Image (tube, rainbow, N blue to C red; front, side):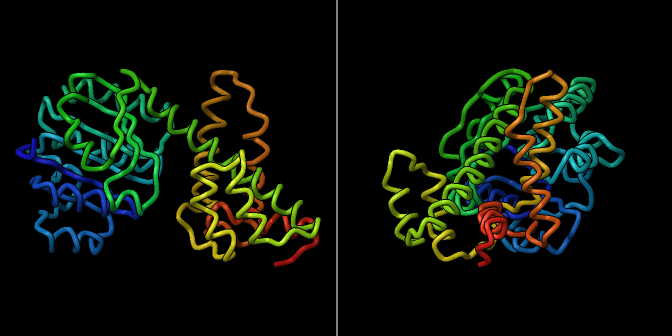
Length: 295
């Protein structure tokens, strides 16, 4: 329903292309970002620019946020001058960030008190997929709110799933990032082992990509690994933040997570050695250095 009025809060690497896709689909859009100069490409494309989350949410049927962490989520939603202060009763609030289930549950309680329907709808995919509108979106929260927002979510993702009525989508996003992070560590250790054994670096990566252990993720990262160009699609520091959320959520439920806890130490190593802002797949550099193979 392109007649829905949308507010979008958070114009980072993902938020800008996602907002642009809403404009392309004909939605009336108001945007807010703490750093105002990032709103310019959206304003040039026809979006209104608000001076606060509260102002952005005023009159909106659907409010979407894509922000950095738990603190930012609370700042833009439930804190003074947040979206909930401006949102009308019956509005739908969709947060698409990677945040903790605990922080999300606090937002849920506040939403219920305000008469706001709250969807947790994190995404899987890169900035390239965000620009193409082909992310994977998994949402949890009230089913009636989800049904009203299927078209909005479809602007962001080619595959959209409703996975529950509570915090299920938060856990699913952490499941995905856990497996992605562990895959990068497995790949780094294996490639370093093969390199030490005399394998040609590029040929080894090509053969892995054609083998039983091939995956879309390894395929996506193959060019980066072969070129040793670790410009970030997702940084080691961002992965560290997500692993902290996983470990804390696991601790709260007494779930043993030995591999997750171990790999978190590698993200710390990357940050301590100046690699925190490189792509998380550059973990292979750390393994090479540990093996005495400086690259």
